Image (cartoon, rainbow, N blue to C red; front, side, top):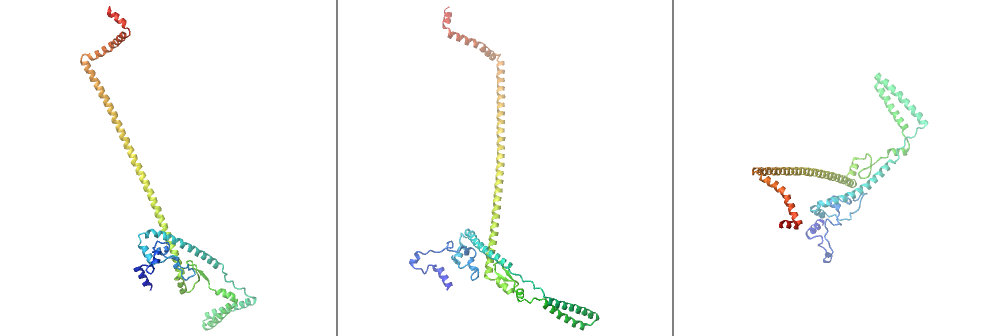
Length: 346
């Protein structure tokens, strides 16, 4: 029936039996709905591990559907949701283990407080005297057995050894405690505690019973929980280490990039300085070259003046001496027009 129902769900949908009115408020469940168990989607649900045991957590309040799990595994968002579901499962499992470890500590304290078997009570004076007599007989018989053995009388020695064994049994009876309570405590089985699931076991119990416990739901379930926590913490620590190394590598790359940029700028500045220095040198060289050219032209002009018979120099000198006199005469004329006019009339 379940197989047929699953086939019909696959062919016709889970809402195949709903009426039109019921279909209006019906919503198809997907794996990312809050009603779906994320623990079941990613790994296992702890509610399924301890069914019908002392650690039974009851039925899971959320949906467990193999089809939804298959849809989740095929979804393109699978890798994005796995860390979220695993973190939630790890948190739930850690709470279970914390509660279990508290029970284990209480179990250890209980075993430590159990009363150890009491030492045997001291022998009475009568029994002590009987014990001394028996020990003396055993000593004498052993000396006789040794002598007979040296004499080669094996049969007599064996007969005496049987008497020694009888006396040893009598000695044991005298020294053995007769208190029924002490005997019961001495014969009581010692208990042990399972560190995985917190169950009490009989120490040195039969192999079949030990194997039955190891394969039981409670032991296997808590083993899965503890293994998952260990695996999750190891993966998380590895991821943190990888992230730390990536950050360190990124910081080292940035440092090297800064060093390269600094070196590039330093070389660029050095090139600029060299270029400016070359420009200044060329500018100074051009200035000196222009100055030399100017001097050369000046010498050439002076040379032409001397070749023309000193006319250029004489003209300059004459113009320089007479120029001041002519300017003075012109100013005098402009200031005293009457005087000048009188001179013209005479």
